[in-house]
Image 1 (spheres, rainbow, N blue to C red):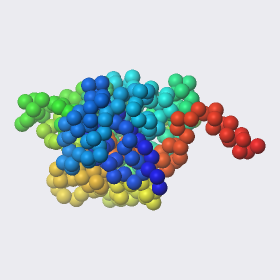
Image 2 (image 1 turned 30 degrees about the vertical axis):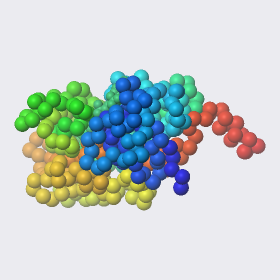
Image 3 (image 1 turned 180 degrees about the vertical axis):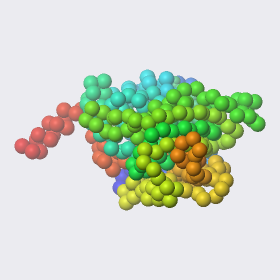
Image 4 (image 1 turned 30 degrees about the horizontal axis):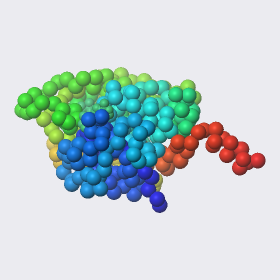
Length: 373
Ligand SMILES: NC(=O)C1=CN([C@@H]2O[C@H](COP(=O)(O)OP(=O)(O)OC[C@H]3O[C@@H](n4cnc5c(N)ncnc54)[C@H](OP(=O)(O)O)[C@@H]3O)[C@@H](O)[C@H]2O)C=CC1
Ligand SMILES: N[C@@H](CC(=O)OP(=O)(O)O)C(=O)O
């Protein structure tokens, strides 16, 4: 099968580098276009990027020239699939321009996650929310060329909803308390100053608690004809930055609507295999892995389970305040960012939603009439 050409916006950042790592040998996608800030445009990737990953920067990518970060003016043809890893303020300005140019913008940023007709998706949890694309891609400000924006959640929200989805389905969630320990790579590069974080914990990450609380509601919400009905549960979050390189750990207490035993909860996690049989290259075999170890999960030991795409849960025990408590861990720049977006793109490919990009919608309806006439 011929691989689809893709581009990466924000290619030099922490998440951009993960995109390069995950897409360099991807069987369905081929990196054809890269862009970062104006400071980087015109430089080679090797000149513009401080490569921070523990696999070598691929030679082909190192030699690629960074293009202007707008749909026009590239020296090479703009791909119709754009992975975006930009700060929210920049994403708010740039992502709609690429969607209006007929691109599928597969975004990591928080800029449009809560916009009513923008899907906020974790494929194992709510791929049915992708139906929102039908209205979004025909919006006037999308240029009528089939372009759209799809988002993946905040890195802490992803691990949490993977663990919660099978429990919400079987028992219902009434309320939730979560306290996070988030890795420094979550703050981008150079991120938090070493003097602030070494030997320390910082009990504040700007806007993080608000994002975590509201995104869980949309991700576990139900699709209705009017849009997404948010999950009716109380969620309270504390977010903390800790001196860990990669991997976000979350301590969770929950009250369920229906009583559940420990065995029933463990069974719900092990039987949670929503993408089984779809053969998506980035999907982990077991999205939620339970570890019986008394002191697991731990970021250094467990973040790479399922090639960095699985959420590891452990320490399930009764809670004296709510019903049950447990710990969940996931890799923040793989499962929590670039890997999540690549998996979203694989699902979009499977659903045929990468097929009609860049062509005026009227051309498609005219063609459809011609075929049926
Ligand atoms: N790190 C994480 O764990 C997660 C991050 N995210 C989100 O992903 C996005 C990227 O995060 P991260 O990679 O950590 O950030 P970084 O700060 O590491 O990277 C930012 C990227 O954006 C580019 N950039 C900066 N200014 C502009 C501009 N004006 N126009 C175009 N491009 C610009 C930078 O290019 P240059 O090198 O030229 O400056 C760089 O490529 C953010 O929205 C973040 O919130 C989401 C989930 C997890
Ligand atoms: N704020 C997160 C990472 C992140 O960028 O989140 P968001 O994609 O919601 O902006 C962290 O610090 O770990």
